[in-house]
Length: 95
Image (cartoon, rainbow, N blue to C red; front, side, top):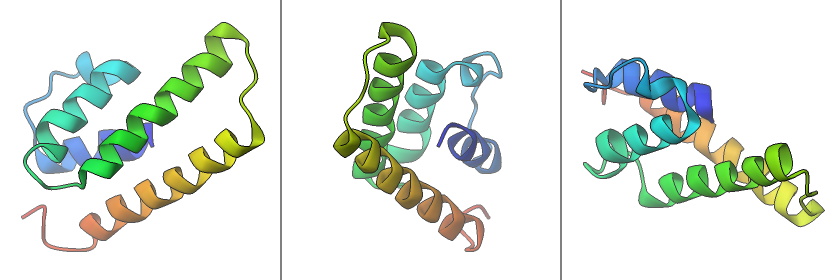
């Protein structure tokens, strides 16, 4: 999701300083501001991106396990996220 969001921001030519798009929180904020709020991506996608980041933080930094249900949720939403990005790359929304 991180790389797909970064590619979308680059392709959209959004005015995002490179140092912001290097962190998860900066990239999520930029994706929301430049692609979700203007309606280029669905709000649900932005929410899923945020939630996946929350799960990543728990697993990576708190050391707490996430449930199988949470993992499956994240996997499904990551797939949907990538499909939405791919749709936009194969359409004329970037022009």
